[in-house]
Length: 166
Image (cartoon, rainbow, N blue to C red; front, side, top):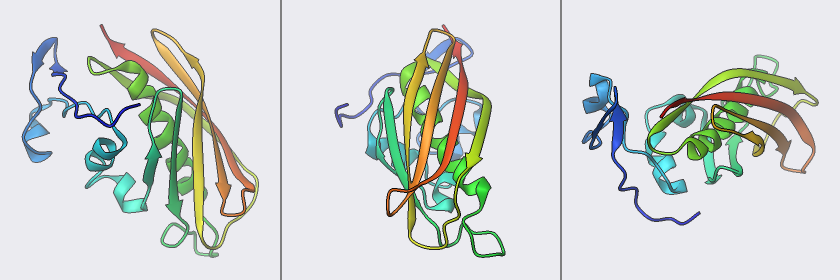
């Protein structure tokens, strides 16, 4: 994947159009510009749950997408990483990869996510890697493995996305 700017138009109800100037301008139902680089995905995450949880994308492409998230601020009252935070990291990585597979004229939407939590984490960061299991015309499926700083498996998730459009 190259880190070149995205120039493809976005689509809304079958009509090509340019991207809105800002996220606020996107409230008319139009899709924002299609991010193609890791930096563009980071920018697109501003003001979303991704930013709120501190998820940092480190590599983005349709076959393999990676990222990390701090444990601090994403814990349950017992001080362990919240399982929902692990699932959010997993779904984010799989969804970004699926959207890269779908391309600028189609949309990837989550159909099903499941997760198994293997161990608790109290500090540091967790790291996720989404790997494609299936990249088809109408669906894409990913296995996402979340590990702690020592490389121990914390969570294994599977995400299936439906590809909408053309």
